[in-house]
Image 1 (tube, protein in one colour):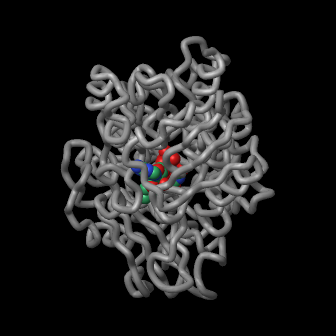
Image 2: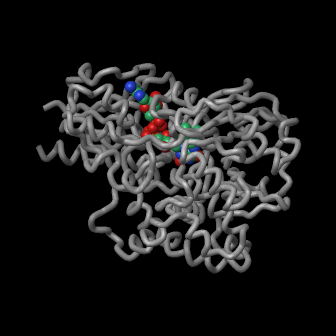
Image 3: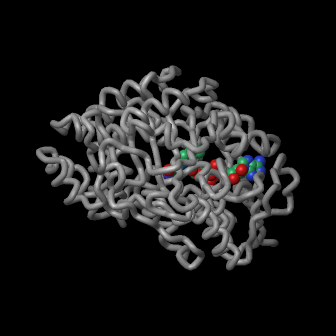
Length: 471
Ligand SMILES: Cc1cc2nc3c(=O)[nH]c(=O)nc-3n(C[C@H](O)[C@H](O)[C@H](O)COP(=O)(O)OP(=O)(O)OC[C@H]3O[C@@H](n4cnc5c(N)ncnc54)[C@H](O)[C@@H]3O)c2cc1C
């Protein structure tokens, strides 16, 4: 029997899957549609010469906290995490910022009377991150390995973020929690939205919320570098249009979302499985802007200069209104904006004295509305004079994002909605397996979902290997 596997797509999950297969002794070919590997973990000169921008992901609490990435010698392949002094800054209209400090104790102290409640919510998971991370970054287990920890998480995580935020008395703390929960692309009144706040705050305290020196591409290059030591390489500019052309492989691992899987594997999949994939729902899109700047962003709140990530949306009520609008297909007047300012902490991103910034807001899937004015309005609100620093900008509508990475369907950066149904059955009850016994899906459309952590690829490849060996 030949021992050959092909991975379609060199995003972080495709590369993770390839590494697991190659480590198990398989000969692995990775085929990538774009001219550079990485998918939504690429760094490109998107504005002016010398300005390096992250096309997709920019900040990595789950990348640094990934049990799989942590098991690989990525440091030997150039990956260096840089930690800004604080994890996240959340500026408010009074000219101050509420801070998510890396240290849980410092955050507790800075949150005043809400400090003990924050500590009580986060500490059990922070202290047991090495047990907690593998437990939550996989399909929901029938029998948890750490039942008490999982039950404790489930009790809070299944609730809407707005309800959990009311454990805090101060508007400032509620705003901080809302900004974290808004990464979910869910309405903050929906079950499970609280999970995202915890899943971001906990690794921020446990392992940090770092950026990689040189940008997202350094993560990809490190994964590719390690893969090369296992004898496998990525072939770029090689879009796969049909799996029929890959008949001589034992295993096919697809770093694709359900819609694409049906396109390339259509004839190989059963009708009932295809119907189930057809019911898979994509989430809201992103409207993204990359900036080349002449100076650091002139924040009103000095604390914002201590964090690589800044959440712009004001109060819990405002953020909730913004996310609710998007969830019902509307565009927020004052959108919640996620902003990264990596060049403050990594001088390799821009020419000396110059800076980069990365910002996006949520919009309905495949929206064509130009949100530039509103997005920059939110930055100006907390950093008057921001527009005077802009040397160049590059705007990405949802369609622009999808044109550079086919997995970003309608601008959905998470590989599909993460509501309760798609949290449990992602993309179907089979998870990574499909109706064809040699074809597996390993993208962010499988558990545990979006983010650069490689855990979808890791679990998919392990399932594929164990079933293949069992045959
Ligand atoms: C704007 C934006 C901001 C984000 N911010 C963050 C962040 O700060 N932190 C974080 O952790 N995550 C973030 N994410 C999410 C994260 O980047 C994704 O969840 C992650 O990249 C998913 O990895 P993946 O391997 O499943 O898919 P992708 O990274 O999308 O990779 C899929 C790959 O498959 C290739 N492909 C598709 N079709 C074919 C085909 N037919 N043939 C061959 N190749 C094909 C694509 O070209 C691509 O390279 C962000 C994403 C975006 C877009």
